[in-house]
Image (tube, rainbow, N blue to C red):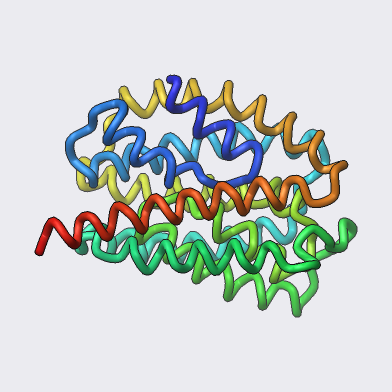
Length: 253
């Protein structure tokens, strides 16, 4: 439950970090032995936590439903394909590339207009096409690596629609939940979900999410505070993944 609280807080605050934090927590703190079981279980737990946190952002008026639904709809198709392939491949060998993608996403978020955006944006044909393409890509990566994908979804929503980061964080939770649920179902079919652990993780995640969502809304008044927090977590997690990958490669040699 404590690990779930940490994950829920991350999801509520920045709309991401859930599964990237959940998988190592399940493996190294909770003690789950099988990495694929940790991925399947975390996908279910993070999906539930994301949907729970979505309610808080919905009440706060930060969710752009048209953009969120378009991105998530395309992403579900991508997540289905990605998770199917991911079960067949040792994902640890690809974490190095994924970490580099995270660094690139963080750098993009730090650009001058990262905290700007149109809070009154509405879906149209052009935005829908952009969000569909970006959603497919983010969904595939999310399903392949067994993660919620918030670190890709938030920049994707901002790039595709031009919405501010607070709206992207709130809107991203719908996609995080949809992608995670899609991945969890795919893994559950193969018996790779621990339902008891997932339930405890979800309970902790709901508590953490309430605090994270409240903090996100308060920080939105401080122009780029959310952006800096988001990118700081992004770089830290990416550096951690790179270090683990390098050590694994050295050990393998």
